Amino acid sequence: MPDSPAVRRPNRAPTGNPVLDAILAQLGRADIELDQPLVSRRTVHAGRYLTVERDVVVTAGGGESERDIVVHPGAVVIAPLDADGRLLFVTQFRLPAGGAMLELPAGTLDIEDGKIEDPLTAAHRELEEETGYRAGSMERLGGFWSAPGFSTEYLTLYLATDLRLAHEDRLAPDEDEDLRLSRIPLHDAVAAADLGVIEDAKSIAGILLLARRLEAAER
Image 1 (cartoon, rainbow, N blue to C red):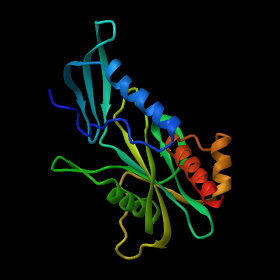
Image 2 (image 1 turned 120 degrees about the vertical axis):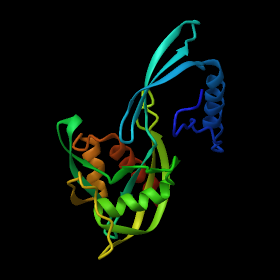
Image 3 (image 1 turned 30 degrees about the vertical axis):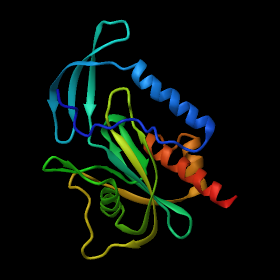
Image 4 (image 1 turned 60 degrees about the horizontal axis):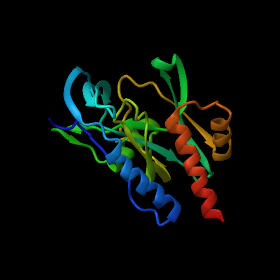
């Protein structure tokens, strides 16, 4: 049976921190001890860029259980920080949430001829499409799973700086996207995440990871 498209594995790279590396070792052992062998896999829905699979696995007790998995190629989220210390956000209507959401720019990795787009390439593309800006510097800050209980989506977070407007050859947003751009000072963005004004998980993670990174750099 082939693996799902865009299959990834949890990060087990050593950190150099003895406590954290001990935790990683425990997780590595748990990979084996808690493994759920795959019995069967079938596609129950194939959409534009999402596929829903129904997997049957062997549980710890020896029985079988079904798992519905949303197969996603992965995505990027960008924290664009301007020279005045403001983050660029987009506001867009989100049908599942029933309203408009304030979010960091983000987007799904493209798939062409079965090959998944490089996240760095996607980050530059999505920044320009959603904000109209290009970045002179794009630094990877980390990555995280959006919903590992049911989805393969893994998001890579980038810090975009040295921002400059794209002009006549600007990449435009997708036809079905209606985006509004705003700029919020980083300290206000942190407050917005803390107080629930921003409810989008990837944006909250991006804001707080960036804030911690900049705080550490100032020490």
